[in-house]
Image 1 (cartoon, rainbow, N blue to C red):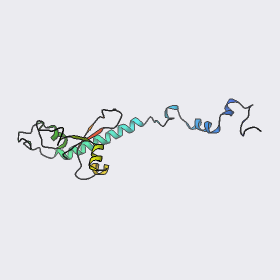
Image 2: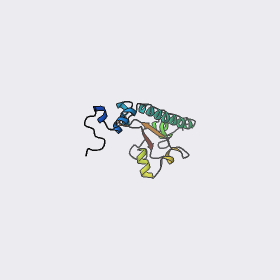
Image 3: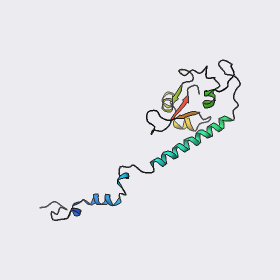
Image 4: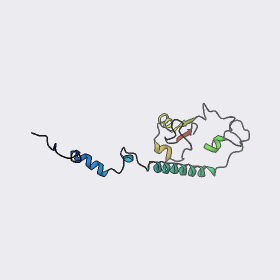
Length: 151
């Protein structure tokens, strides 16, 4: 008794299972066969645009705050402070403590250390300022969001 659907005298095309025929008919090309789409780059670009817009909006809100005249640590004139530009922290570059109070924390580290959720970081008032930096491990990954510890 022969197996169901097996015909030794059938042509090559008839030997192909129906499932494979349907797959070949509905598949546009091999480029999208593994789930990779051509519009992945467009989606990534859109995410970057949204991130930039959010950052610009936050910068616009905080740009209206007048810079203090003096550093809060040493009372010297606060001219071009990196911490003031990024985080509105009135500390001069000479007094900046990279290992302690003014350490930069990645978003995942902030979430695990302080038990925060994404909504806490993004939506709550006042919004926390961050510095979006390209990921050094792999540039294809999303931007790192670095938060200031003293915030």
